[in-house]
Length: 294
Image (cartoon, rainbow, N blue to C red; front, side, top):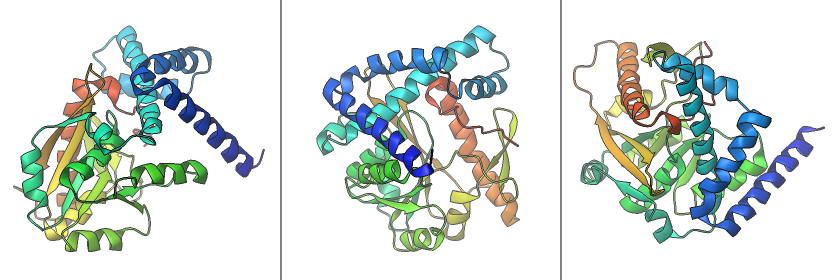
């Protein structure tokens, strides 16, 4: 099978599930997610071993049964997240905003409106896409969202339409640094999902769940030149199906003298905030990528 044919099949399945989601409605998504989890956790396991391996490393104090329970619930959570993204296609601004509650919003507005440019840093926690959409709407300013394009261009283009639905703008990873610097210099907002595994040859090593973890220099390299505000925005799904987002600022206090050490320290501060949030709801982070490959 050619790559083009594979992409078309994947996109056809994506559109099929999107139509199913539109029919059943967003409130019934958890039911479908639980059904699909039975299939993809027990019958056709996809990345199940990766999830269990990551959880075992992160939580060595937990029993095998506890780890499996978190892993099972993680599959449900990821299913809910992606089907909610499908539902966003037909949702308006008011419906998107009804899904979220943002704590510490005044801090966010104060930093954003200072005109220095700002970085909103998030992670694959809860539903990160609704976080970007809702923050752009609440702040009434477009967010330039750094994205890593997917292999399947058909799905990637579909996702671009969702992300840019309410005036946010995608900035592809790669030829993006100059554009992001320009955005910050003009007082704009840059959005970055910062928890992906970095490259071994030029990444920054931090401590994450007591594991040496390679991250990208990413946001720290952008931020440190002009000391723009760095705000970590992380959301957690609550029992009502809505999301509560907390905003915490990463400050530049007490940084080391060397630039390389400063980059490492800023990344460490971010990953510590993320780890603390994950510990509140470990099933809601995306454990399906091999964060500890190196």
